[in-house]
Image (cartoon, rainbow, N blue to C red; front, side, top):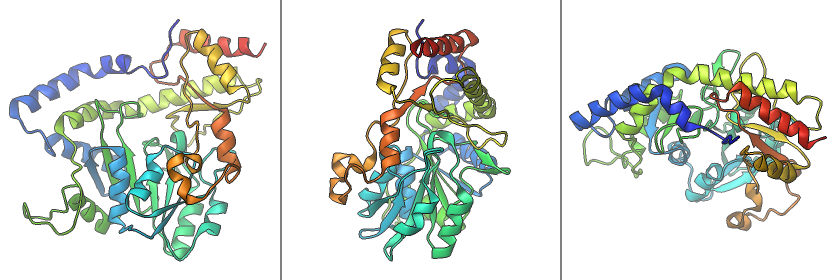
Length: 367
């Protein structure tokens, strides 16, 4: 048997007709950038997330950069964030000349630990960027209270959490501004790169609209500020519009698959991701933690089961961030997670036969 980490080919079969129809319309009319489908995608996501502004851009990294630019982050500022995340969470800060200030994550869900945030705040702290890791919402009540107390804006890196909710409130609507990725492997993934900035604040929404088109305001070739070129093209947007109606059912299937694993593997020496009835975890990745990670990964590979490691090197130990002065041992929970985390296939198209084969193979490893 051959089971990939994600099966985009199977997903495409479900939306092929809609995407093909949309593509033909775009190519016939030759309206290629920031047109009908970009507007429709923005409207759909804004309504879904419960925010007035959803601004498409070229990719998820640009979404982070635009969010920070909209907040006015500049050289010499500090932004508190997590060291256990994808690289762009911190690189977006550094690219603007600001300093990433890391605090460790919680053992329970590997999200940033609110208890540690307050101790990292200085007079230079201008933002807090949280990551809803693997699709699990952070403790936004505690984090937003800290932001309000110190008048520091909160950025949500929701690249992995579109559709996660708590008490009816959606990911992307808790903080001041949020960044979203439509990378092909995301729960709502495109046919190439794509991103979006979400915000409930009109000032940040209007500023982001200008920043993504070189800082242009209402008049073409008149620039109110220095921005970047980060426009989403219609071809990518039309595929996302076609896929969007399936997002809720796809997320539900991911949660169902995660609960299946948790139940079937529950007696093994494994730390499992925890789901809840409220939908606070939409399982972008199903990441277990095991001491024998490398051995288990190799065993499953021999069985034809592909897995992933997210993330093998925490950001504070990346060579490019050596100038920050962190060393091994600075963030023990993140470092332990980097050595023990393993992502199993959890995509919605997994069959019952495939899931049982994965479970049986893991049980065989532990015999």
